[in-house]
Length: 217
Image (tube, rainbow, N blue to C red):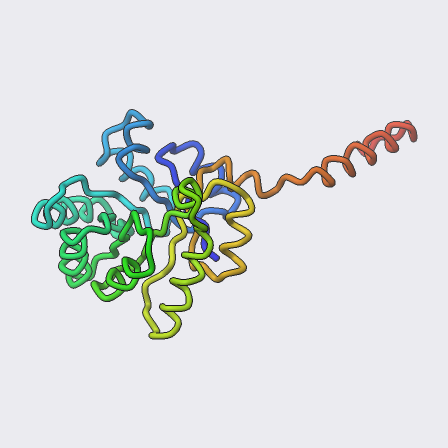
């Protein structure tokens, strides 16, 4: 399973990238605003840092505007993925942009039907939002499983990019189900290394080692 980092913070991306934990990056207008950077400038810096797909999102609401913005964003670097919303206009933009050979990430997916028509429109990635479904008492993982089944039934090439990932359990479940990609904040990805029994074991080893009075260096 591929790991995308959901942030526009360069230092956080660089730290994970150095460990081989970054297969791509996703951004959105909220993350760009949080970074305080110009969208074209910070996106170019991210693209120069990582070799995988970097999602940059359009902000227009109409298909014509999305297509124009998508073409502009795509000039930043070859690894740009144009991110469009799962609306009828977004699907129109997806069809045009993917037809031009550009990677397209269709975002804000909350149903199997939405995922199905995004694949039909040529989406490179579909982004179902796990955490936001959980917030309204709908099982986000069930949606991932359902999309996986439908895509496998018909051989769609669209990759399932599980988004709104908030916990280590979300990532583990996505891996079990067969999501192609997860995108998560840096803190969630780093948290995968944590386990209370690891901490407990290290504390025991440290205490026992101190009793020996030895040093390695």
